[in-house]
Every structure is written in structure tokens, then in C-alpha cells.
Image (cartoon, rainbow, N blue to C red; front, side, top):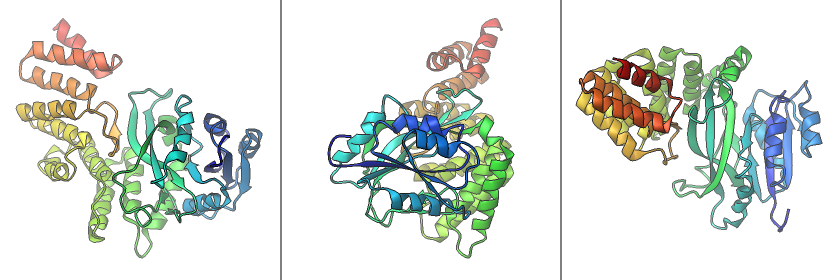
Length: 370
């Protein structure tokens, strides 16, 4: 690579032969070194990584993901570090922009757009959660990972103002939430076991309960998900911290999945007051109001979702909740109100934005044939 600055990729892996070639190939031409920490692979992971030019460091698994990541950081010689998981890849068109980080003289962290696919294979652009995520950070300033599972960078102590971080025009695709992966019982059992152990600590990190809730939600244990995310919110508040927005998203997603619309209303307005620019919360409010037959108020919420759009990645956002999904629900509301023409127009708008939207397609066809 040209220039004096170096960019290091750091990863931890175990039995990732299914993914690792795609991940490393997506960045090997734009990083200066690839550090792969292997925690005990018994497949071809190490062989594939070495063949693609990575430096592979065996690391005895201690049941602690952050320790393994921090070991990798210690091996990195770059001025900047990019961290990825094996089941991720950088968009090939965006990858060269990772080196834009070298020009950031006034910052020590940079954001990318993380796209978490969900649903059935192959991945579909509309089945995704999106978030601006700090995947690049300056080496040698004390940044380290914490937590035994679902590890996170400890950024607040080092960089107090996280609200003005620069974003690079880079998309990273994550495939680990897709059905074929989440239905792997061994992965769930491993994650759940580590999280339960972390929750038994004398002063557990509030994020532990959020991740327990997320694991429960993925296996459709919505009551447990609701209980655990409430614990997370309470623990954040007890520590004098504002619960992050994604906790409220999960809380109300769990309640909606349980059909507990009375339990969600009107409390969701308190969450919206905390995060008024979070389109997902406004969308959930609209669904709740529609289910309670407050149709005019529901329509107002869905129209506001369209105003907010989907450009704000400061919150974990489900693709479509600022575009085609509100149009679909506007159609449902208009049908309930006895306005077939308005409903037809709304379904058409939804299908313009998402031609494969199955519910909108079915509702539109039913309306035309009725």
C-alpha cells in the first residue's frame, strides 16, 4: 500500500471455513496486514486465511471474546484498525474508501454502515437491519474490547463525544442473523450459556440482559425477550445511564410479537420522547394504534415515518420502516376506514418501493378482485 500509514484488519475466528475466504477477499487489497486470531479451529479456517495472506495467531479459548479480540489488537502494527467478523464482508465497491480513515487527523474512531441481513437465504436487500457502527479506530490510544460475549469497544472513557464521529461511505454486510445461522442450536446454546454466566457477575453489564433478550427474540421466545430487555433498561437507569435506543426497539418489538397492544400503549410515547427521530418507534406506535382502531392517529404515525425516512443510522433501523412498510400499513388503515381508492394508491406506493413485498402484493390483488 502507498503512503506511510498502515491499516490493520483484526479478526477472531473458530471453524469459519464457510465464511472466511469471502471476508478476507473483500478487504485484502485495501489493508496492509490481516491479523486472524484463531481460538481453536478444527476445519480449514487457518489454511484458508494463510493462503489469502493473513497472519494467523492461535489463542487458547478462555470463554471470553473480548480477551481474544484484545490479543489481536496487540499484534496489529497499523496506525488504524478495522475489525470484522468472519461472517461479514465489505462491499467490494466501497472497500477502497476504508483508507479514507488515514486522512482523519482530528478523530480516533470512524463509522461504517453495518447491514445485518435476516430471513431466508439468499440475502435480500429489504430483509436487513441497518446501523452506523464504529468499526475503525486508531491504534495505540488505549481502546480495548470488553464483555465475554457480544464484546464492545470501550469508547466512552477514551472519546467522550461520540455524537460527531465521521462516517465513511462503506457498507459491511453481516450474514450471521440469517435463518440458516440462527437456527444453529449449538450457536444459541453457546451464546446463551456465556450470557447467563456473565449475568451472574456481582455487577453485570446492562448490555448482558439486552443480548439475552436478543437471543430469546431470535428463537421467538417473546415473553422472555420482553422480560430481559426490561432488566437491561432498569440496570442502565440504576447506573445513571440513558438506555440506548435499540433497547426500546426490542422492548416494543417483543410486545407487538406477543400481541400485547394494550401493554405497549401509551408507554411507547415515553420512549419516543427520548428518541423522537427513531423511525422504528414511530412505526411501532402506528401499528399499535391501528390494532386499537385509532385509525386517524395511526395514519398520522405512518405518514410521519415517511417524513423521517431511512437515512438516520444513529439507531438500529429495520429496512423499510421509513418507506414501503408505512405505505403498506396506510393501505390497511384506509381499507379499515372503507376507502378502497386510497388503499389502492397506498399499496401501489409500497409496491413501487418494494415490488416483492408479499403482504402488499396480496392485499393489492385482493382489493382489485373484490
